Image (cartoon, rainbow over all chains, first blue to last red):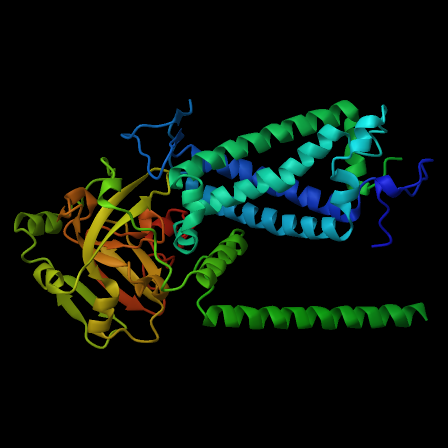
Length: 218
Length: 253
């Protein structure tokens, strides 16, 4: 891991070889981005078969619903939708495990993402070289709260998983509650993605995107 | 010097690749031996489907039971998709109160048999209140009474070579399940629902209950069960009408 130079550990003078994003961050970022796009598209395909949300164990058109999304019922897309959803989910989970393991091994979370008191004291942050407090909280929230919640609520909808871990379903308040929460988490993740891409665009889309591909800013 | 290193490098890469392919081949054979490879393991979605099926088969056992509920939890509405079969044969059997109806159980069995409804009802029964989710997203809780499929498999002497039970109904919505689900204690041939005779819309006179999978595996309007080691000879060879319509064969999700 000695070849990785972390932003916070890199020399301040803007040395040419300073790596903004470590290789494992760049690789897992793009694989995850593709898999997340697959999850959103296929999740939509599954949702439109029955775009009403419920609370508790059960829910159906004739039963009281929690939210009726203003989308028409459109059958026939959840076949490929489910195939793509689980394929993307597996890629997401496996990539996520690699990212978290590498992040712990290289102290990526500790050095670059852990909220620091000092960051709040230092008036000006070189935002090209390190993350500001909002970014830190947002990224950690996505990695350690939203994505694990998406996985847990997703698994809670599986009748086979529920036969092994019934507590998973009851914790969320029932199978339909898990479905509703899964949708809520997905919306939060999509909102994060929109804000994330907007901020990248505002900060200089080409330059920042290149840094996430090559690892270098300059 | 450089040439030699690169040649050695190529040789080493080749050996590693060969070992990797051989290792993968062994892994696939072992996985297949332990029933971890679903019929739809090929194609672009094969990887995800195989990972899902294999991990759930490793995680679940015959002792992992689908959640069961109380009478108070039974849903007021239990929706159905589609109507009963329009086949004349079905309507005639229905008109005669299923007196001439038989469930044929054949295939890889020592003693094939055609069971009457009365015969099935005299066997030891199991009653369970379970949650059924449709692949569309809706769900309901209902009580089901029937004879465990395991009891029937024992009676007819299912072969140890069996890999699937194919459920063939009077309508087009046929399916197949693996032996892990076929032998599972909650897998029923149900003839009662919520304490009453099985309503027409819910699969009268007899339906399958596969409680650890989505609703489409619980085949309604049963007429025949075939025990087999290959699903290739049935329909388009995909193991069910839903897989033929693009849905995954395994629906434990």
